[in-house]
Length: 267
Image (spheres, rainbow, N blue to C red):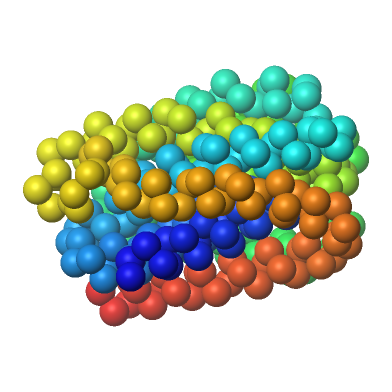
């Protein structure tokens, strides 16, 4: 019975990754949270386990999404080159911070990031611009570092944040989505290692087959399904309008933010 929501979550995660260019962590984390709650995982380690497992799941999903978008020629290779290293450093620092904070802190970070992205998406304002061209390399590196750190704290690939930043500098939404999928392959890797190491002292409180804060059961149930479905989502993305993508993304983020807000209030 626990595998059913994980498999269903894998389907929706793959679609989300392909359509929006994100690794699907915004969906994986809440799905895992409910599953691990039903399994009786202690609240003190539950959110960390969700985030660590989410980072592992979104690697193959982001890879499939990126390949599908790249085949359509919609990726900005220069952005991938500039952003990859600072994003890697940021997620390394974020995973270290996550190992020493309480679960409600990670939930709060998730809510803040979700609300920022949802506001930008639902507003649908094409005139919200910081500039008409991408900023200098140091500024882009600063964006990448911050996004990497936030991604490690909330268990996402950072694709949604990358898409938002690129669109603020005039990058077309479909190109921004495709490029963010490429960056989403890099961001989770050091985070996975950090969560695996950070959770090692808490193994008695974690489910069987867990490597630190990374659940192999969660990975095995969700990763193959989401990876297989991601190319379908990418094809769907190129058939949808910019506004349809924005409304769907923003509405989903508001629902997830509300769920975690209630979790904090009722904890």
